[in-house]
Amino acid sequence: MRTWYTRSRKELADAGRERAAASHARATAAATKRGLPVPPAPVPQTGESRLRQGYTLLRSILATAVKDGLIGSNPCQIGGAGSVKHPERPLLTPDMLGTIVEEMPEQWALPIRVMFGAHLRLGELVALQRGDYADGVLKVERQTTLVNGKPVTTKTKTGNVRRVKLPPRIAAEVEEHLAASKGFARSPMFLRSDGEPITNHALGQAWRRAARRVGLGQFHPHDVRHAGLTMAAQNGATTRELMARAGHSTARAALIYQHAAEERDAALAEGLDVLGRSPIQSVTGTGMARAAIGATKESPGLAAESAV
Image (cartoon, rainbow, N blue to C red; front, side, top):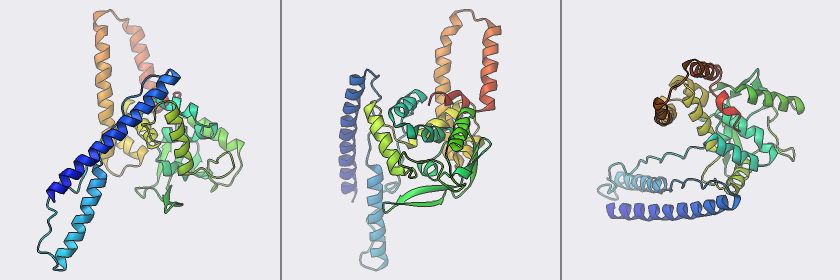
């Protein structure tokens, strides 16, 4: 059993590295052709999830065989083999997000901006209704996922309803969008150019095409949510605030974004270290700092909203 597990892990990891290298080569070629910076190499898929699922299924089958008296003991006794730690996703910066959105058809620009400003999961964005918005606040209470290829609308992932304050500029765009279109409170908030509601598949397809064209194919639509939450953390959001905005049921996920913010803070401090060699006019610098702090307190997402 251990031999099979070790060999399978190596084969899956090798295949993941080969796919990542091929993907990065294509993205690099596309970026070079368009005169864009070469994107960072994507994180290789290790195959750990597939291996874990296969091992867990096998262990369950053999456990049933033991219970039925068909075998004496379960040979699946490898510690930690049934669990996996997913690698951290690369950070989608506002500039990168703006580049991808500009390459997408116009109909997707506002939905992506709302996804970024409200930290929505893709299914939550698709399930939005016109009545979910009021006075700058977005109510998130449902999601639409694909089950056997068909859209099914249910409660959110955690089963909770949350209300998220949108950055002012994005809120103004939503109000303009709702005023310019017609529909009932329970009508879909966003429609495609053909008048049909947006779908997970249509948005994902448009995103992938645009991302590949600009050499950023390693990013997924879900990375938009991560980008918004990371920027909220960088702008001082607490763990409780991140949990409320993201709809997390535990602090574990929120702490990931705070950790990313701490790493960014350390990088900023290192860059500012060069200022110690030259005089700084404290009045002007302090005034700018106070203005920036005041702006981020008013709206954690305001500092980033103009980038997309």
